[in-house]
Structures are given as C-alpha cells and as structure tokens.
Length: 463
Image (cartoon, rainbow, N blue to C red; front, side, top):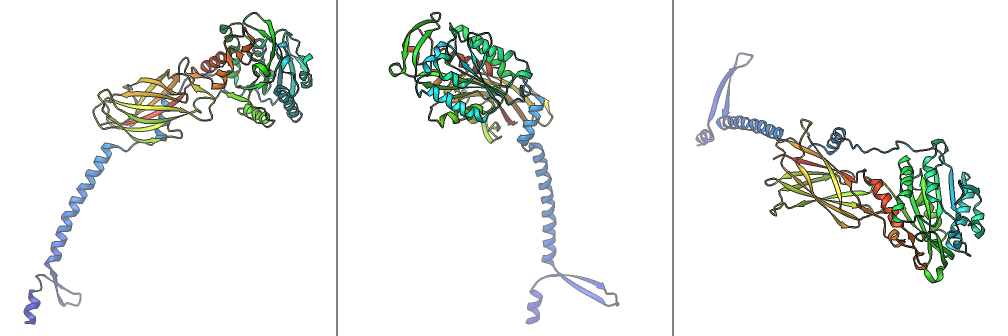
C-alpha cells in the first residue's frame, strides 16, 4: 500500500545522465515544475510587450515641461522691449540737499509747537548726524540760496512772492551727472499751478528725474497754521487770514527724489517717532507689486472646456492647463496689488501683448489667444478673461502674456484724494492742496504707461 501511494503522489519526467566517475544518474523532475516554467515564459513575453507599449505611449504624450525652462525659453524668445532712460543709478553720491520753500504762503506754519516746526527740529537733529546734508532756500530768486534750518523756524524767512516750484525741479532734471546729489528733499506747501492743465509743467521734470534713476516719494503732513493765504486760481491775490483751529490743519509736503529705494520710509519712521502723523506715497515698479490668481471660466455656452492643472512661479505667474472639452476655452486671471503698494486701481483698462511658442520644436506659433475683457474689481484688484483656441500642433503650447496699463488705470491712495481740491477761491479750501490729485495721478499713469504690470505664462497641453 505504501508503494502504491508513493506512485500516485505525482507524475515525473525522468532524465538520465552520466557522472564524471562513469556512473549513470537518474533525475526525476515533477511535471508541475515544467508547467510553471512554461507559464512564466509566456508571462514574461506579455510583460515585455506591455513595457514597450507603455514607453511608446509615454513618449507620445510627452511629460510636462519644467516651468523654469518654459519661462527661460519664452523670455529669451520674446524679451520685454520697454526702454527706460536709466540703466544704472544717476550718481553714487550720498549727499543730501534740502530745499525749503520761502514763499509768504508758508509763513503761517511758524506757530509755537506746530507740526511743521517739530518736523524741522527733527530734521535738524537728523542733519547733525548726516554730515553730508545741506539746506537751501528757494522762491522768487533766480537760484536757491544756502541757508540754515534754524532760519526757517522764523516768520522772517518767508518773504518770497513766488514759489517757482516747477523751475526748481526742472533745474534738478537739467543738472549734469557730476553735480547730482544722492537725495533731493523739497519742503513746500504744495503744487503751484494757476490751472489744471498747467500741472503738466510740474509732471515733466518729475518724470525726467524718475527716468534718470531717482525714486520719487511724497511725505504729506497736516499742521497747525495761522497766517495769510493766497489764491493761485485768482492770480495770487491774498484771500485773508487762515486759522487752522477754525478751518482745519493745512497740509505741507516733503517731495523726495532719492537713489535709495526706502529713503521715504526711513524718513517717515523718524518723523512718526516724534508723534507727528504723516502719509507716504511711494512709486514702485508694478512687476514687484502684483501677484496673480487663476480661475476656470465658462465659455459662452456655459461649459468649462479648459481646466487648471497646476500653478507655479514665485508670484503665481505660471499655470498649466489641459483641454477637457471642445475648444475654445477661457481662463480668468485676477491681479492683486500687494499690501505694501501705496497705489489704487482706478479702472480695469489694460492691454495685453501675447506670444506663443511650441515647446518641443521651439517654433513660434500664432497665439490663438486674446484678451476678452478686463474689469475693475475693487481698488486692489483687476480681473481679466482670456480666450484660448486650440493650437493645431501636438505637444505643449507655451504662452507669454505681458499686461500693460492704459490711461487712468491707476489712482492715488485715498488720502491724496481727500487732501486735493480743484479750486482755492475761498478760505474753506485751504485745508487741501490745489490739484494735488491731478498731479499725482498724472505722474503715476505716465510713469507706468509703458511698463508691464505683470507677465503670466500659461502652458497648454494639446489634445
């Protein structure tokens, strides 16, 4: 019985061989083992075919190109071509020149412990440390005269019948590079202009200094005032005596032209530490002030055919997209001003330059993309919608979209609007400054009209 059970335990395949000593050896290999080898052989053939097909399909679909390579190629192929007059700082000088408005309209600021006097005293202490600082008086005279800051704390200092602010800033802009200081400060009671259209006379030299490399900032302070005021609109006639205790504090300003980006911020901190409230307007490149957010947007028939895949870039300027329906498809872009920007958005009026590059072949393509609409969302955001048609080219289509402002895109901060007036024919208007808003708005919009607000880089996978 034992022998029969042993035979039935399985079938064997017998192999005989001869050993090195001449003895014949019989090997018995179970048939199940042979069958396993056969199965493994056929499975390996199928696995090999699967790997080949997988590699071929992966090659056909092509992996998404890295964003840093996309941006590099697009920037190389389509450089932003705006031109500024400056390429370096206008001067390496660290000298500081402070120009004090000696016109009679500023005499009323000289009252005991007024914010104007406290400002001058703090500036004097700061000047004792900054040994490169010097003071000059400007007004009716043909050229500014050297003075001491202590002299500006007396009413006798303010004896000039005209301010000649335009002539002063124009003279700065005309200076030879070797004579330029690192910083100009102009302390005045504001923009002198007989009519709104004349404000351009002050804008032009201001923009020339900005284009030469100076950072333009305005520090605004409201101060106690008791003295006579004069109407520019009515030809400079004296209106009467203005008292800030009845009519409100009068503003004065420190116009700052400096090679140091944060000079205004440092000065504001110095003055604020004295308990003097002040506002600062600073113009910065908008490429540094904006960030982008992308959203899916339905097309005209309510379908979302272009979907977001991935966002990338230091400030969210890159986005990967894929088709999930029949083209065309829309993409919404929301541009947001950073909290550090002093400016506001006045309208959504912008334009876009659009470029397209087929990434695999590096061929320039017709973009098949357009800006459908741009709108003012709130004082800190602009909303744009772009429509994409399908590019008849397999692989990845990469885009560079450069956004530019148009007239009136930006407006000054709220405090500038509140401190501005379009007339000065009565005492009640002298707690504000004639055409301040128009001056600032013109500088802002003319400064940035040819500078890009933001650059976005959509990457679209072909269907």
